[in-house]
Picture 1: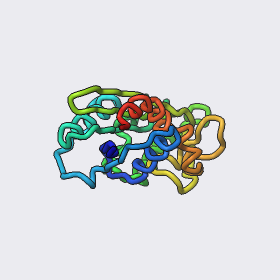
Picture 2 (picture 1 turned 120 degrees about the horizontal axis):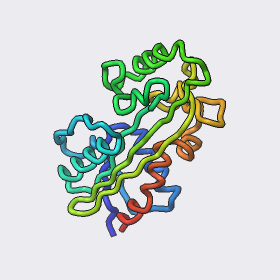
Picture 3 (picture 1 turned 90 degrees about the vertical axis):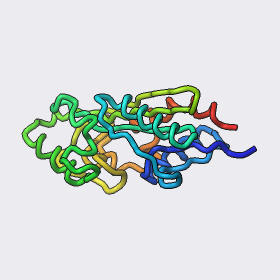
Length: 203
């Protein structure tokens, strides 16, 4: 029986590898992951919704409608307590340039320059959505609490990982191995919650 093709609404190879590891660790086989680079281009809706869940579901619906494949999409970001849960859905373009990790991180650290250590609490949030053409839609959410450090630490990961220190760990998210991060991260938690829906796709 042929594998089920599952579109991952991302061009980030790290996200595809992360989902592959989650599927493998859950013992789910028979699913071939396909990135956006591997399907014909289609117009992608801008991420303009007010919540991670709405953005993720819009991306999953777009991908499923355009390709006829079940599509999984995520929207994630960092909610900082002292900034009233910002940057939130604006995390990827906080500095004004989409996806400029260094500029985004530098701006965040500057904004928190005067904030004392005990008020630097934050949470990484990930919403993952799965849309099946003509079928079901599933949206789940994962959160990972921690604090924002004063300087970037580590070189693994991406985004705000170097300045996020998870609760109960003295290391930043960028100092964790991929496997350690999968086990506890916001996206890892959301993907774990999505496993029953993903398992239903397997042939």
